Length: 79
Image (tube, rainbow, N blue to C red):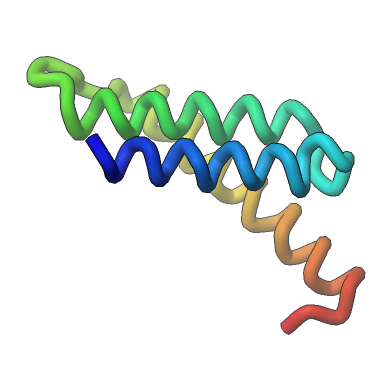
């Protein structure tokens, strides 16, 4: 679907502009990719049910990402 393609373009742009240039660590790029796959599965797979552990892991990844973005913004005087 179109929406999935658009999301992949956004992820690819993020990886190109921020991960490959080492603004954010490669591991974060991988974690975002995994989160995207889980979100896609939860939206479109009829029988996908995220476990409590997986949900907690994804919440932790989101928190880690927010911290990295906040740090980047502070270092570059972006508000």
